[in-house]
Image (tube, rainbow, N blue to C red; front, side):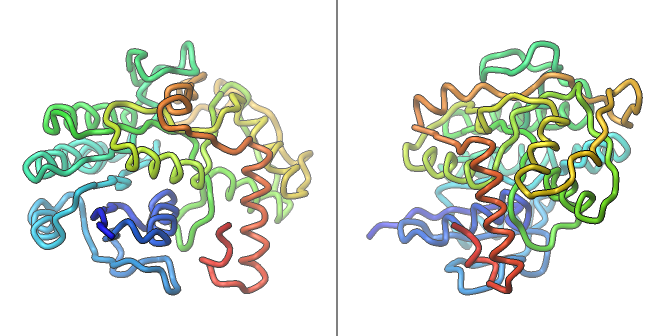
Length: 316
């Protein structure tokens, strides 16, 4: 059977780990996972290779392209901590913009198809949720860097390029340096720590399992263009936190609603972003789980892992 060679950058991150698990289970793909760590964070008998890679090192990327000759590159490598991006703009720009342009040039030169992960933070949040064709207007440096990455990829790839926009990504993972929003809520409520969550930040939270399935369908159909991949429900982060508490049987009275004016963050956040997924539903047959289903699915994974099952056995 013919196989397609897929290179994943940022494979030790939240979405990267999910993609490695899903792709390694399929015989139709030959997978090379890469990340800044010396080894993969996914343990067990997954059928994939791993090599260390800093996407800001053009020579190292060129070497991996020469050795592996990928047909698809899924770029999950990014600096995503929004306030850190505001503080360290040089590092943010190198990863989120310059490295993307370099990857795109290599993909174009080799005839490889680039799948670039982007964000709803390319929008200003005045009239979300957003369609793919809406005009970007980022309000923080993270959003500006991701939009620059999109544009650098467009300028270099000239055809074989898919840009995936998503938001508030959550899921199961091993060894991350900081938790996603769901993990943060669970950790605090489990230890009876009160938390404050914004009522004026509206999103369409995205489960990594759904995102990986959407990306797999994009590869299968060989699609190019911009695609929104997220959940369907448009809700405030406060409502999302309460849904997490309910799904994991935690005390929601520990969650206090606040607005951004009460507790400003270092980097400005857009108020109402989120994404409309009609195009992906129509062209990719993308069918994300409902928020309730996704949180129940994640809860099951967490229970299986906590009982001592290997990480990969907790994936349904």
